[in-house]
Image 1 (cartoon, rainbow, N blue to C red):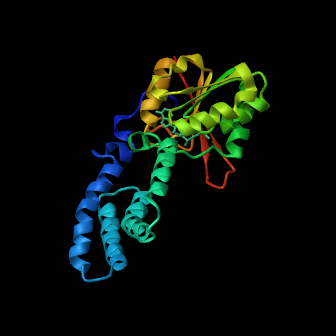
Image 2: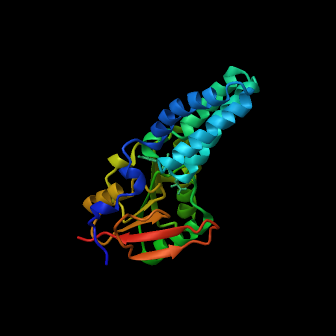
Image 3: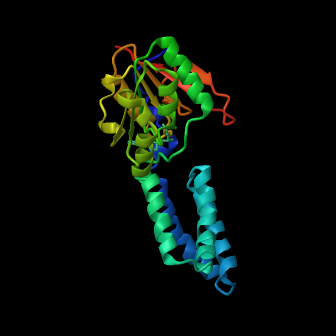
Length: 261
Ligand SMILES: C[S@@+](CC[C@H](N)C(=O)[O-])C[C@H]1O[C@@H](n2cnc3c(N)ncnc32)[C@H](O)[C@@H]1O
């Protein structure tokens, strides 16, 4: 059964946590670094940072942070110590910080990092768009525009639109899709400000965090009968009309939801 209603008990675990994992991790390090220092202060720098990392990993497990945050928190302090020991020029750190900020813009708030749709996803989408005769396609958070470019090249009748708020991927997407001419537009901005009602098929490859709110937005704005497709992240509490397994080596799945009137 397909419905626009989202079960209130089906919020993703991460969304139910009061603090975002990045802030939780910062606070957790504020406690674990002094604790590691007190316990192993007489040891050389690297061993005691390993103790601090171990504490941070245990605290992350106790707070039920996702597995990748446990790994990040375990490695953060030892990696910081190693980086300081390398005595690299400060300008290098500044350049790396600026480059990462331009690519992962706002990720601490949105919790949607950049990773790209596989060729298997592009093929499956191209098949669906061709079968359904879709004319206007939108990729929410279009990254470097690779997906828009590939779909636009395969389907010459398709109008493709992408929106991206990280500056560097947006620039790349605009440059990459320039050959599609007026059939393609890539906007710099937030998907939450976009009117989804202009598109027959909306695609998202984001993270579990925004899915419930995004589906509510799709139901509010998209025309009845139009399709909302999420790559790998299902809408919590809503049964997809169809699921297409992707042969991408990651066990990816396209979840197809049809907007009802
Ligand atoms: C996982 S990537 C997917 C890239 C592309 N859609 C693809 O499938 O290859 C998600 C992208 O969404 C962008 N993003 C996250 N939140 C956004 C928002 N609120 N508005 C616009 N873009 C957003 C991120 O910067 C990132 O580039």
